[in-house]
Image (cartoon, rainbow, N blue to C red):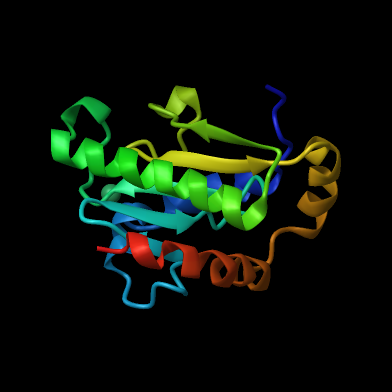
Length: 163
Ligand SMILES: [Zn+2]
């Protein structure tokens, strides 16, 4: 797998450490879910758009409980996260029609986890040639307006998923 070039990720990593506490836990608490880019709260999980995406429709899925170790999730929590992941993949396929999707979970800082204390799945839609146009998008950065458009596009699909 080729690495997508995403220079704004550096800003992201810098900001993540400056923010107080865990950004996932903070997002879960947020009242305005559009502002927080939160698409769905299931019984035990949360689905949101990544504020610093690798690609359009880049989602993050996390358990609602602050936990860094997959093995420490209860069967119910793990099952809920797995179900949410499967639904999110279906939704990304329906709404973005990508040529492929990358799924990833970075466990530990050395594995590339920006926020290592709250485990999360990345769902990244991929299109042929996106390695080529990503640097162009990277130069212009991904603006909040753009993210809100993605949000509004995805939100109706997640309505049924919400607990
Ligand atoms: Zn947390």
